[in-house]
Image (cartoon, rainbow, N blue to C red):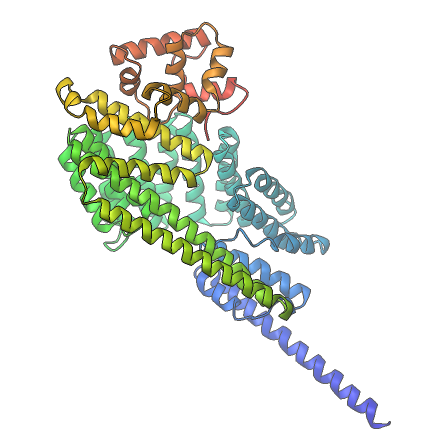
Length: 554
């Protein structure tokens, strides 16, 4: 009986020593993660994941683990949509009145909601983070909050608010001497002015960012700022100066840098604007040689090549390029689907570590996911083999395959994306047909009729379906305009709708609406401005966004 208290005391001392030793090891590990977080987030994440059971940590260490993990995942571009435990970490720090980690956690709550596509909830989380950060002396987190609020406002077309938030981010990042993020904030503000149609202000902020990138020798931003300046100059029609900045960007980029592909693509766009098809196609070739396998980029590249070939009258090549463009569009949806499956698998792998009881359920779910992956793989392989076999058929079968592939993609698209694709393809087909001479149109009539039959069926004509699709794409803009401005004719109403479509030229409008000339379209636009009270140089989309109760497009 006398020995028992002694044994019990020894056990308590050993346990206390073990706990103290574990806490020291955790502190050392977290310190190592924080050191690597800025420059090597992948390594920081790998170091964190050496902890096999994070929930076995104490509350303080566990919440610190959650905060460091989501920062490392976000900085290394890993998916964070399932990291909702950060909401509990925010509440934990709020109760302890630790405002800096609470503000950081609230900021990442906003990042999770943003990645989930929930813009209103993301905005609320960022505003809460802003309120908490105001109680700290941490300019960098304040800059991050303002910069992300700028991004959210831009996506919701709140340009004035986005501009204000972007300028705030510049101030805070400057105070934190985080010049890399300061330059990125400058570029966001420049984008706000570009959306406003104020290209001079856009160039000012891009040039300021370029000067800062040159001063602090930040190579990637030296390239990006010059690219942005070139794109803005291209919008203004200053092709010569745009080429100079793109050449500087090429000189500053590394030979093995995949970003060079985007510079080559921008150069191709400049030559396309100058109607130098040979030079444009040369730079597209250079872009293809250095662009890697990113399907999103390759889709843009093949789309531009198709437009150049179409303008040059190379109709068979243009049709082939459009086909490749659609193949890469299809591939982007496959990539998104595979990434979603991988995220689900990772989520269940993490849950499996929680308890022995949960492991049996997770194994069942894991098996189901593997079966789903096999099913998706079989579908993809079947689709690939089908397209490969179809290549040996005649041109008409090629055209049918391309359109049927588009229809298959539409089933997997979000509703508004589907409508946008239908509109773009139908518009391009109509413009392509109208651009042909009478002789060529009659010769190729059978091919166009075949494509229209697949796309339209027999209910509506091609232009009726185009108008109907445009009205859906713009949330009933035609109906709203007819109700708000009864003095506008039907032709003027459609001119308003087409003028609000990004990239729609007066020449395209004149072709689709059978208006005699581009000058006549411009004249009618002037008459519309008078009837609606729009300023003589007012932007149609901005004006109707402001004066109608709902937005026009996404």
